[in-house]
Length: 516
Image (cartoon, rainbow, N blue to C red):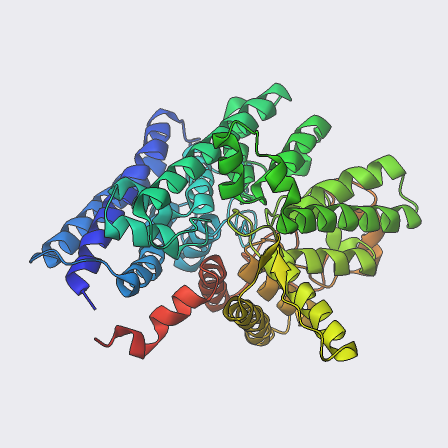
């Protein structure tokens, strides 16, 4: 293990992450804090930047010596440690500004942003609501999600330029840089993905502004939407009660769940090859799953007596938000019928496409697993038949199938393992523990808690009305602040675990990994 090389790259990453805070720092310089409010965003950002640059300098001093290459093992270590470094550095403005005095709350809010989970502690446990939070802090939350949506390690890897270090960093995060061998191709892919990401963000912001949102709200929500993050400048999207804005958000949430690499390749070819996206088995599965989920939920809500137009409005927005793992919500779906909750939980677990900002175990793995089930059934009926599992016309190697099955099984195992840990807090119940675990690992945001039956009807039939829960309300219109500090830190760990798709972080935690 080349520790000097790891320290050198982490030094650059710490400097990069510190400089990113200059954007909200400038905003803090121009904002007015109400008299008596115990907040100091300007001091929080300034102190955080100074600490970050100091950490960068110390890491750089510790990396002195002859430069050595960054191999795959070092790249994995850098990815895991960079996320830990970002979680701590990004939490400092929340805590030192006085907005989130609790360290556990500050870390949770930062990690939830970076992993694009969208779960929040604002508005709960005595913390200010987003409406009462300084604009600079809201911008920092949104920026954290935008950086995390594409991948903070990938972004820094792009800044490194050419070289083996950059190539390997570009491939350790799950953001669809497909090659591990061709540096020019990896770099060009990263630039194309970044351009696509920027273009979608600008398009979303302009579209939201056209629906009547302020430019600040439009920019913050575009950061969160394209990154499928879910942080809002309000207590919920329902506060705006703006149907055109919901349509824009639904559209870009769906796009955020698509493969950025595929979108970038189509844009590079001036959309002449866009039919290749439509022919993709994963995109077809993603689209079919989304349409089917919206149709089932809409029908179920209509059966409960809701108007078709209203049912379609809340079903389409909230289902797309859940399947893209964005976390926005206009309705408290905890109060929806059991069939709807089941569909939403399935959508949350599966998530969006590989190489997107969405979480879950990804549609491509679902497609391969379904193909494997079909293959197994056919082999059972005709044992002597010879065939190969294909994806988009190409045979899938047995090693790839085995890897996919291993990740899916590990994903499910981790969900139940963390659910068992969360269940030690008896206030949230079995469904709350299981859905919270799945939501954290899928980076989806809201969970589902048991509700009081008397409050269900009002929450079902209105936008933005939250049902009363039997314990801490960790649902879509509330937050996680009422949970114990150790549980919020455990959830933060699980969010990073899910964002790095399990293997990277688990590998870093193995003692054997650090042996030479």
